[in-house]
Image (cartoon, rainbow over all chains, first blue to last red; front, side):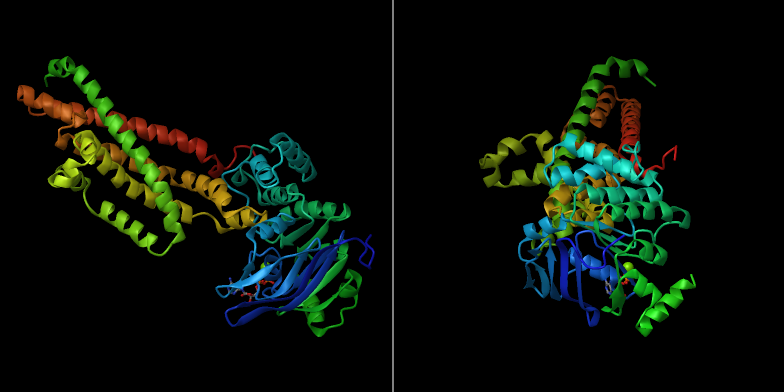
Amino acid sequence: MHGLEPSGALRLAVRDLHKSYGSLEVLRGISLEAHQGDVIALIGASGSGKSTFLRCINQLEDCSQGEIFVNGEHLDLVHRKGRRVARDPRQLRRIRSKLGFVFQSFNLWSHMTVLENLIEGPTRIHGMHRDEAVALAQSLLERVGMKGREGAYPAQLSGGQQQRIAIARALAMQPEVMLFDEPTSALDPELVAEVLAVIRDLATEGRTMLLVTHEMAFARDVASKVVFLHKGLVEESGPPAEIFGAPKSVRLTQFLKHVRLN
Amino acid sequence: MRFDLIFKHADMFLDSIVMTLELTVASLAIGMLIAMPVAVLRTMRLPYIDAVLRGYVFVFRGTPMLVQTYLVYYGLSQFEFIRDSFLWTVLRSPFNCALIAFSLNTGAYTAEILRGAIEATPKGEIEAAQAIGMSPLRMLRRIVIPGAFRRALPQYGNEVILMLHGSTVASIITIQDILGAGRTLNGKYYLAYEGLVTAAVLYLALTFLIAGAFGIAARHLQAHLRPASTR
Ligand SMILES: Nc1ncnc2c1ncn2[C@@H]1O[C@H](COP(=O)(O)OP(=O)(O)O)[C@@H](O)[C@H]1O
Ligand SMILES: [Mg+2]
């Protein structure tokens, strides 16, 4: 389904990312590139730094070292008061609007209906006309199988439905790259499939995506590349067939043995 | 019970209801205007400013509204420079003095209610706003404040009722509010309780209406907290 060689334009590049919590170095120099249409699965044991890496990319966490490029644009980071932050907050906001982020815990705005959640970003940040934003929202609701639930509040939806709305909300910003942080980990087992189906659909469509997941079968099926993190470093990466079929490192072999048991 | 005397003075009681409502609603409105910036600024914990705002809240929640009203009405007029200044045109009126004291009082309580509700904003909702590139100011307007108002609604309903009851302080400084009208009736005919019972019934009725209104508002504004009937 996917070529092994990167083909399209470079959408996301991360160079030598470092991050510490106090004296604990959580990311110890991670680099990664995503070209148009790449679906990169990030796997690794709990605590290996997957979430932190994803959150550093759109600066929900600050990083101590490393460079981030989105669609060729370099995010300008400077040291201020002991932290490394964006020199220009407007540049950061522009870059963030090009990165769709999907959280483990959905994080829909609870006082807004489904429709309001979907049109908030397009109208307020992209300045899209309301009619146009509503039309876009309708088509996205159709895609994620949630048509007809425009007026529902998040608390009135199941976890799987909330996550599909959260994906639609991220897509409504028309991002260059989608970042998923364990999108199905907070869901009851019977609700996982409906969310994975939506993500699979996006992969087929040629979306550029970074996906942190514990769903190994799904990663193997959908990813064009798999990256295995261990203690804040990329221990091994490659096409899914190699990563799952012929792991080279001891760590990855151990990790896969462990997760296969589940 | 001299119902005839009560009904004979129905007009007086009607006027007094208007006075009580005017004073309560105006105090709540000005109090809200004070509370919103105070609450938002307090969540930012700015040096110096925070100390001033904490002091304001501490003083106005820590002293009785009766004392605050006395201080504005009797206390400020002791200063000649105030009596000589334009402030005197405002402070000469008991209504204005009550309004000032009440607004500052409910402003302090409301600020604390709002601050609690703002600080209870789910972290994930803020991160979701950041993640789509929202600016901090827009996030405040679109996510934090609307959510906080909804969360604060039950507690604020309580504050409105307490303010209604607290507004009886006004009758002490010659304002003819509901309690004032009751006392006038009692005094005029040397009655023991007719005026006060009438006042109590009127306060009870207003409280009932306010509680009902907040119940309805909560059902609408907090729809997001209710599970759907159809799923
Ligand atoms: N806010 C934080 N403060 C301190 N340590 C943290 C914080 N967030 C994460 N960590 C630590 O960073 C490491 C990586 O965490 P995380 O990125 O969440 O891992 P993963 O997503 O792979 O499970 C863990 O050791 C975790 O305990
Ligand atoms: Mg994680």
